[in-house]
Image (cartoon, rainbow, N blue to C red; front, side):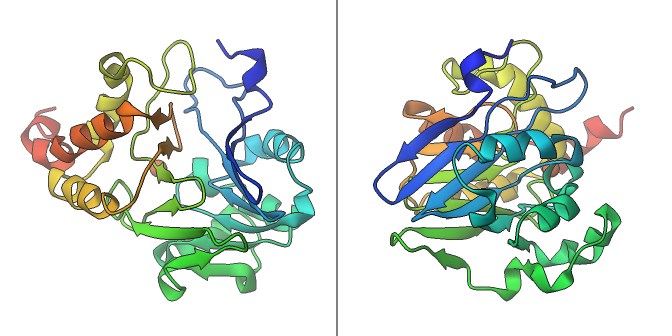
Length: 257
Ligand code: FE
């Protein structure tokens, strides 16, 4: 069940110059289609979209984003990795905005399969500075997230809102009701753990990522699927992920079928 007030998104952080916004739940979300979250950062009137999603979501995401910013002012779109639920709307977004697109370099050659793409507007993250400095003084830091799950993958830390956009890390697959924040962590594990055990590569990489992100002051963890972690659940999540056995740690189990 999606609450009426969640359809138009929610401002999760705001100060005079900087906002971090969740772009709402999809009332049309069909059973069997993985639910996704889209996020918009607005910094001194400039818009930055994070993983804006697949083709079928384009109209809804444009309409919700337009409640917060003129679409013409979205000048940056960041794709954490190549999956269709992240980036298959790229040709539509390049048509609707003048934005530059950041994506892990490994995936640039695959983008034309999602439609006609102006390569001059595509930036391979590895070829750019690892930090985007914004007008308010906030910084967006690209965080290596390779093999979690994709071979070329970045999450992003927003110092303005102290939010870690974790992409597929922390993803959950809702089976019944959708909710925005994790309240009961143990209950949430039932819809989060199976995804990580199969999609994430191995515990050694999970540990590396947790070690890397621990240098940041994190108030909120916002994954691309499922619910968000704030307060106590931030720490709880990082502790869980650091010790998770997944992927090739369970090779015998995977090949037993
Ligand atoms: Fe993915």
